[in-house]
Image (cartoon, rainbow, N blue to C red; front, side, top):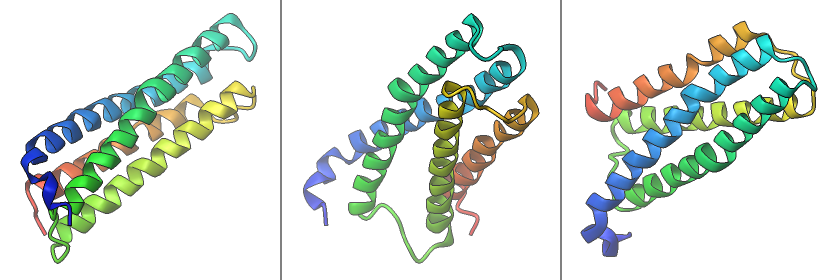
Length: 149
């Protein structure tokens, strides 16, 4: 379908990996910021405002563009026939990526809660949520590299 892109396949794959690394860095760091924000900052305090700036910039300037780039380069590879849809691993990866995108959306919604001064979640909740990207990353990487199914 996108055969004209075959000469650039290695570049597309490299940019996909780089964008995923950037996205995952944010997916690991943002919930950790939320832990400290929920536990240490009083609503409206200078520390609260500092956390809000850090969280907003991480999400808007790093995570959102990296997620979009990950999807774009992944879809380009998909259009080039990089996935065997008769294999379970491809579906496992797709579901893992959809899960990661949903987790990203959840984190974005929590940033809006902090910004509006209505965070109702504890640091413990954010600690638990910090594990979700790790689990999804393991599923995705094992599905693509090991192809156990």
